[in-house]
Image 1 (tube, rainbow, N blue to C red):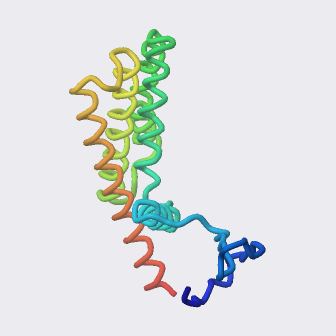
Image 2 (tube, one colour):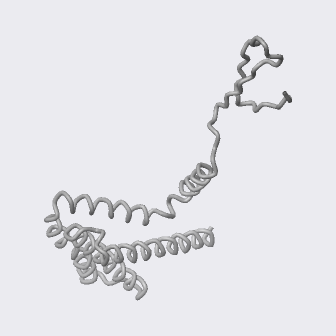
Image 3 (cartoon, rainbow, N blue to C red):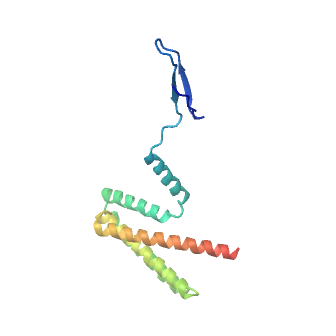
Length: 169
């Protein structure tokens, strides 16, 4: 039997010599389970996701909304009527803000209008998903498009904010 170097984290157990055997039996018990390629890949993806968790916030929120709307659809789909009324609130807030005080630049006005339209689309999706179910093909496609738009806008806004903070410092 060849001598091998044992890892520092492993425990070695010596079993007393058995009759008829010339070599002692050595059993090495590792403190960590052997990691497979799948577990290593899952661990790497998990570490990457944890490191970049803030960058993927819109996708995480959208996924949570998908699950919640599915549960609410199963429990009480009539909640959609209340959500439909709330869906028009962002446009109302935007219109009220435009009447009270106009933004100083066209870019700010366009951004506010775009945010109000996006929030209204999300509210309408919520109401429809609760009423019909979020896995309807048209609603799932709308969820995918809204999630992708939110994720791209989030990443662009983070990049622009990060660049402007570096330039101002």
